[in-house]
Image (cartoon, rainbow, N blue to C red):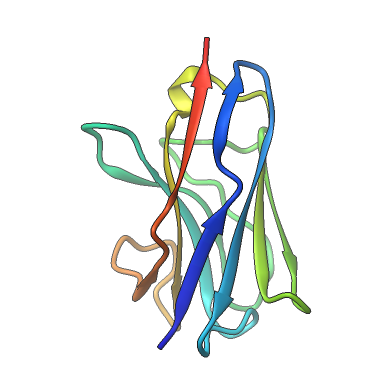
Length: 124
């Protein structure tokens, strides 16, 4: 059974940086699954932050979160791990960040596999 584990969240001051990790296992292999980062703030909906297609081509940073320029996705195929580097963090970036994977669906809230999330808190 596929498994995703997010790590790297924490408390950071406004303007700071964090790098989140998403380790995939149980048959989820980078290069065969779409990988997406979502976030959910208290009382809010789960929103897509960054989406990587299965062919590991260009990463998309969708609206309305629109972290392009402040976020970068990278991968380590040897570790089967995806990273989300976030810079110039703002208090409104405070949320639980989730990693999701699917064999076909791209950047979808209906992705088949989800991690448990990692909390990111940005203080003013």
